[in-house]
Length: 358
Image (tube, rainbow, N blue to C red):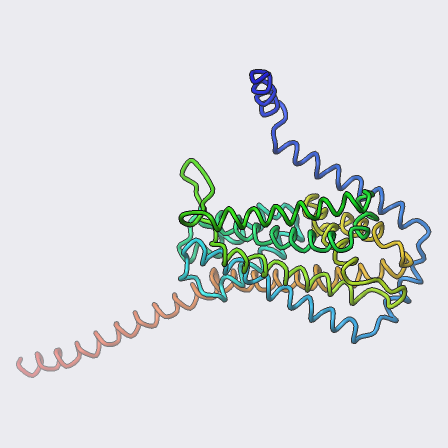
C-alpha cells in the first residue's frame, strides 16, 4: 500500500503537479463565476442601476470611503509587522507602508498577487538591502496575517450565524457551524503550538527558514487582519440599500467567503468571482440595487486605490531613475566648474609673480 501511494505521488508530480492543479482550479472557479454572473444579470434594468447610483446618499458613500481608507491604513502594518518579525528594523514605516499598499493594490488588481506583489516589494525593499529571500519572508508573513484574520472572522461569524454562509456554499447550517468551529480550533491549536515552543518557532527547509511571531505578537497579527477585514466588510455594508434590513454579521460572513473565492481564482481584481458570489449570497436585495452597490464598492476599493498606487509607484520610479540622476549630474558639473574656476583664480597670482621677477 505504501509503495502504491509513493508511485501515485510521483506520477502526480510528474504528469500533473501542484502548479497545474492550482491553475486548473483557478480557471474552474472563474468559469463557474462568469456563468453564474451572466445568468444572474439576465433581465437586469440598466436604468434602475443608474437611478440607484444617483440616489445613493453622499454621506453613505463618504462613510464607506472612510472605512476603505481605514482598511488601507491597517494594511500598511502587514509589511511593517513582517519586517520587524524577520529582524529588518532599519526599514522605516513609510517604506513599509508604500510597499504594502502598492504591492497589494496593484497585485490584486492585475492578478497573480504572489508574483506581481512580490516583484513590487523586491523593487522597493532592495534599495534597503533586503534580498529576495527576505522579500519572500515578508510576503509569507503578510499572507499569514491576512489568512489568520480571515479565518478568525469567518470562523466567529459562521459559528454565530451559520445560515448566512448556506446561501453561498449550499451546506446545512449545522455543517457550516462545524466548519467554523474547525477554523477557530485550528487557530487555537496554532497559538498553543507557538506558545509551547522553547524559542520562536520556525518554518522552512533547505536553507530557507522563517521565524514565526511569538504568541503575543501572533495575537497582534490576528488583530491587524481582523481590523482590516472589518473595515472592508463595513464599507460594503454601508453601501447596501437600507431595506431590507440585513444584520452586519451575515453580510460580513458572505463578504469574506466571496473575498476568499476571489483570491483563490487569481482573477484580476476578483472580477466576476466576487460579484457573482455576492449576488448569489444576498438574494434579499433586488439585483439592480445590489449591482449598484458592487459598482460603488469596486470604485472605492479597487479603481481609485489602483490609480493612486500606480501614480505613486510611477512618481517614485521617475524620481529615482530620472530626476535624481539628473540632479546628481548637475551637482557634479557645478562642482567641476567651481573647481576649475578655483584653479584658474589660484594660477593668476602665480603668473603675475613670475612676470614681476622677470
